[in-house]
Length: 415
View (spheres, rainbow, N blue to C red):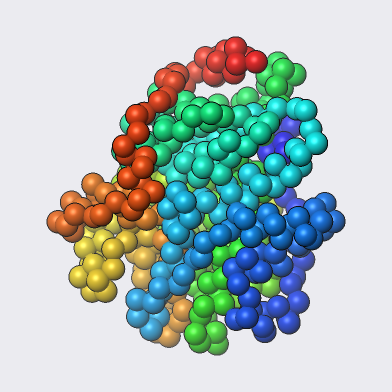
């Protein structure tokens, strides 16, 4: 419920237990919901009764994550079949229902602060919309999310407020973190977070790694997951799945021109810097929070390298890959997935790997990046109904500077 530790650090489980061999041997019989319950039980223990946990998971994960085969080696894990057409629906919906369970007998109002570079905000807004006792404040960088993403962020009412920050995603994240450690704010209002800094976001994100494994036809081949990487929540969730026993050979952290994580993997040095704007905007992160969690899972950098590789690709390469995938496979991929595919192909080429299971996480529906994809392919993309509803609504946002004093004043006057 706190989201962030009082000292500004991130919470992690003391122990990540391995799932039984019987689970993996019979995984083909499990639905994604049943997989989710088994994975969540490792962390929940007796905090939530089994019947309630089943209700939470069944209600939250009421959509699938299909593995779409491009060829014998490469598949796309489509994570955009939830209500806001992005992978964030897994974490946000599970978290909303879990928090609602813990608040069921409480008189206290919880205020959730969310920094978003695109898809997190709309997923959290959708997941928490109308939930009693919870107010949500979405901080997003002005002019740095796609037009459709902004419409999804700014067209909710009731308990959802969009704050348009004059700055970058890193500024939004800085404001959220500063609020969590500000004594005056915390004495006046109960804060929580729905960013991937909150562990409740990461637990359900591990579900789709297991679900992908279930769908792999030849499980004897090495398994490589290529993950479009920004704040590293997706990577961390995958590493947690591996700690639970999922036989993943290697993770490939795919970065755009914000290549801080790639540089860390290659050098062992972490050098955060201001993020720059790219076509794959959800990855435009200059100070990835979850790197601290990844480091906590390993004793030293050399051990990290056994499980993780990383490389970086720019916007022009992204556009070329979108074109190539459309022509070669008749498949439309979004800019984030394109970066993931570039990273996978570079990894297998450099390591001369011929026969493998390569899985690229497609984190959002290509229609969310309509302009970019349409310009690349010279086609018109039909908007799914979920997006049409948002586009037709009027934007409502409150514009704030990136100054913490302005943000603090805004929060305190809301009491």
